[in-house]
Length: 183
Image (cartoon, rainbow, N blue to C red; front, side, top):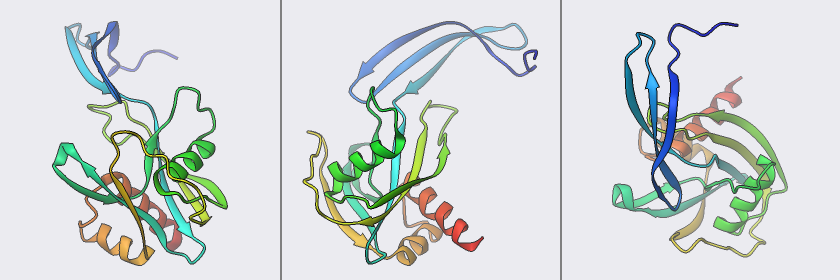
């Protein structure tokens, strides 16, 4: 199959900056019209976002400081995959346990999205966890400030619809799940 007329050709790629959590990458590219230029983007590991339901049907939510927006973020537990993670569902179980202390009875994949593929190579794997109970010991990273609570799914859905659930990862998970309920 031939190259699409919109495809850019990557001539060289180099990491300009590395820090904990992400890299800034510079690609030397040739555009379809032959122009050669640079393109920068943020590269980070894939992540899991967990819509975790307790045995009572409420959703496990977290409040976490987010320095980039200078406020406490309200949303779903999520975390980056580690280099040796090959099983998305196992990684989701681990992240749920580490961040919240909840363990899932069952975990299933919901969807995978590239949330900002014009600037990031991020991939978010969304999972639904059911039968979650607070039986694990939390194991937060050194730079995580998190509290855990539960909320009804209806309240989360309403917050997402009203634009009050500011965390885009969480809003997408809640709305995706709500749409599946409507089917």
